[in-house]
Length: 205
Image (cartoon, rainbow, N blue to C red):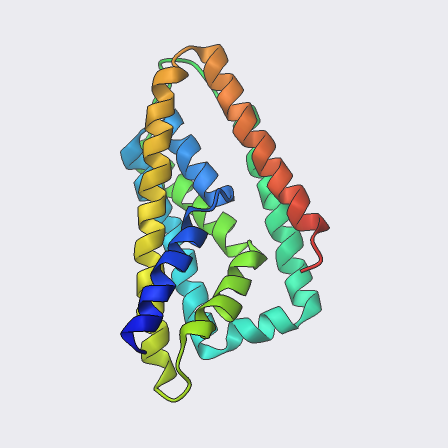
């Protein structure tokens, strides 16, 4: 891979990373409800899911999954239903000022699992790794090392996106100190998650 291709890849990739999708929305909500640290650590679940998807794309498995309409439909419906479930949980989340993480290690693992399942159940992520990343791969050179480099850059930029949305969540916490305001924020995020699920169900691809 030449330097010019990589320089084109970075800004285009970062724009995708910063798009206000369900995972970024969840990072912001976790920071607002708990803390910046918790939101960033929970984001590791998303990075794990994307690492797995990058590996599958590099080995060609993801392309097969995307080409199979039935499998792709199962992934899409499963991802949409999970978004609806998370929206329901966020809608009914506790908004008391004294809310803390009870059993922090267990709670962090739960939040990481939520990020992982949300990312792995998003078929649009499969499309990114099977249609977007290969555009920057030079077929005249070894493919796997190029995929590894692009995947590493993607994950670093994704981590920056996680921290950016978590910082926004921390900033919003100052504006949503009252329980009723926090409830409005949670329900607004829940509505957006539900809308993302509905859009996923309605999309053909």
